[in-house]
Image: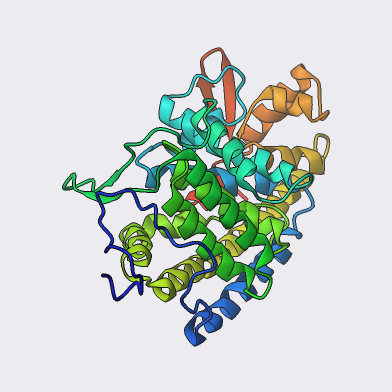
Length: 376
């Protein structure tokens, strides 16, 4: 018997389906003094992030940037590796010619965006999870029905966890998961988020894509509960930097009921990435204002706030982006973009039959690269 888990069933064995995964709420105290203290700091950081997001009137500037970084990092956790340059380049390209890893990361961004839109009709639910995973994987999948799923240590190949099996059992556990995240009103939503993420990963309802689906659900849940207005928390950034602890603490909940350590990990992830996201949003706002002011000062005949914003909404800008925004027709749009290149605000790059106009200062800001030197 596993005394640490306090169960009267057989001890946990990683090679056996964990059909005895306990239902929610956890039997252990999830509102310890340490957790509640960390929760206050995380909530304060999220509140500041929410306010900072409102400082940029054109929300597309944020929705088209930070979620792409989240898509890249969340995909990298699963060893699907692409670059921010490739993501931004192909983000709005029709007939996407990107490599497979970039396409999969872009589907993550699409899943987050579509999930955000569905919150207007329904809260986070099992059906949300299914829709998110289908978009991420690009196939019409459903809750796992076939046995044989097991999670292995990448280095040794040893099985570390075998999730529950049987579609009816999985749906029952997901129904319990869904009730908890919406009905346990006496528990702070951030604590519920940590609990819901563990439980979803432990249920492991899909044959693939569970980790990324769970991380999309985290962001949707924060919006669902009114803690964010738009999903611009770069949460996977923390997980990438603390990947070993992420998996170790997830597993420790299963083997030792170590809820406090896991919840503290997630609260620190929220706090730190909220602070990072807030700082980046303020920097984006300042850079946008500086760019607009330079255009107004040096290019008064072509200046408009909309023109300044479009090169932030689309860091890899095309002539068609200006046309679609109603700023200019194709010939004038081409002149505008080439003028911005001459001014050092954009860089021009040939891509097949068209030219891309890249906002290097914005990309440097988003990726922690040194900013380019340009004339002021």
